[in-house]
Image 1 (spheres, rainbow, N blue to C red):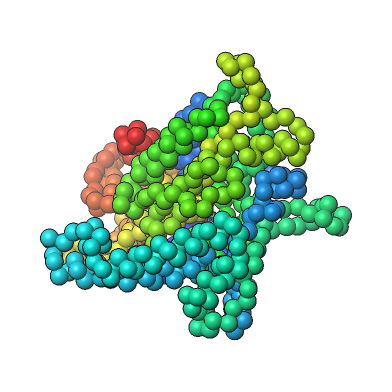
Image 2: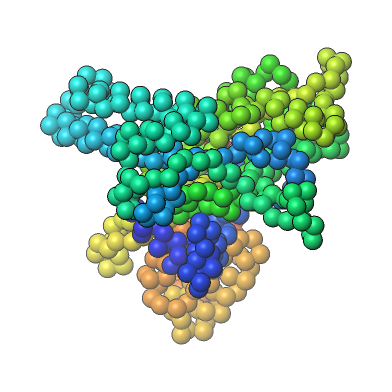
Amino acid sequence: MDFKKLIAHCKEYGFIFQSSEIYDGLAATYDYGPNGVELKNNIKKYWWMSMVQMHENIVGLDAAIFMHPKTWKASGHVDAFNDPMLDNKDSKKRYRADQLIEGYCEKIEAKNNKDVAKARKRFGDAFDEAQFRATNARVLDRQAKIDDILKRMNEHMRNGDMAGLGDMITELEIACPESGSRNWTEVRQFNLMFSTQLGNIAGEESKLYLRPETAQGIFVNFLNVQKSTRQKIPFGIAQIGKAFRNEIVARQFIFRMREFEQMEMQFFIQPGTQQKWYEYWKETRLNWHKALGTDSAKLRYHDHDNLAHYADAAVDIEFQFPFGFRELEGIHSRTDFDLSEHQKLSGKKLQYFDPEKQESYVPYVLETSIGCDRMFLAMISNALQEETVPDADGKDSTRIVMKLPPSLAPVKVAVLPLLKNKPELTSKARAIFKKLNLDFNCQYEEKDAIGRRYRRQDAIGTPYCITIDFDTLENDTVTIRDRDTLQQERIHINEIEQVVRERVDMKNLFSVVEEVA
Ligand code: ATP
């Protein structure tokens, strides 16, 4: 579905609102509405169950957002958590230098894709895209240009060479998308951490940061958790929580926000085993995504060209968002960087005594890190569809339906009396609703024709609608309508809870995780 329509749908149906909208909003911050918070909680539950509940050797943590300022010195964030930024002097807009250069390459890539599409039209079924890309001179030239630009850009990024990035922007004649002008400032490093002040003390000493990642709360608690749970290596600590980044350019709805939520897991391992665990978590995490029914073609790995200061290997799981493939989750081999640095700066030992080897060492760490909000956007953009279906009279009509996995859907079941002004129907429906409410998030709706109510439930992804009609009064049966197939079955009132439970249980996802693994 078109991205603008998706954003409008999220607002209209209570999934996501612009923060402080009555004051014209605050850039890159969003609020989750009544349906949004349910979906988000279900995503977190699916992650938490698969990480903590289903792994004997992974335990949970909920650390504070504020941490001792030295944390961020040790982690490298004070010195190195920067993005290269520049301003356009005419439009006064601020940009990230690397994103401008990548945008330039995407335009060249779009030309190649156009040529590929044209050739496909010309050759029909016989068309071999890989061969075309490997042999067509124009496409090859453009690809070589892209490769060269990205290679040079990555080198400048690695070396922190801001002037080099500035020169590339001049050389490629990149203009401001807003004003069309090439009147740029020089490229400067911009630290992404938000800072605030502790109590009433002024000065550097009292400077506090809003955490830019949840991981550090895990590292500084490594020994507390290990000792209190008597875990043996390898073991992991998982955490879900808010993180804050002063992103230079925050666009694309909830994809890039300044306040967002992360679901991170740090897996502590023996040094030297990182390659094995890197492969393990890479595969395990991709399977977690696939188990949601996401089309494999919409998921891919992308190896990092620029390794962060702490990593010896890193890969992204990318998802095909409405605006292209982008990072959804990162899997990073973080070595012993964080624990060693905290050990140095705090003067406290952060070592593990290995009972089998009879020696102490600083463990290596493998991290899986996924943005909860990006996962939300991925789920919505995957699920939201416009389709043609027969209406009550058998005529074609279009409906907007959110085909979420039932276990993630905000409302599991809607209870609908066929008619509003028949007290015998509404009182029966209310009684059923009251009972089901103890087990599932349900909705009771009696306003408007039944067809319109079905459509409203489709639009928020409710997998099942229970309708109470005149037969119900005769024999205590109801219809249960399936969101995706539109089929209606008649079942006895006493069966509703069991039938719904079987179909919306999160367990269903885990049986798929096992199958794809
Ligand atoms: P990007 O390259 O897109 O800025 P990143 O590589 O800086 O992301 P990480 O530091 O690896 O991201 O963070 C882990 C995860 O946190 C990301 O995979 C993403 O899902 C999420 N995330 C990071 N920054 C944001 C943001 N500004 N808004 C929403 N989610 C974010």
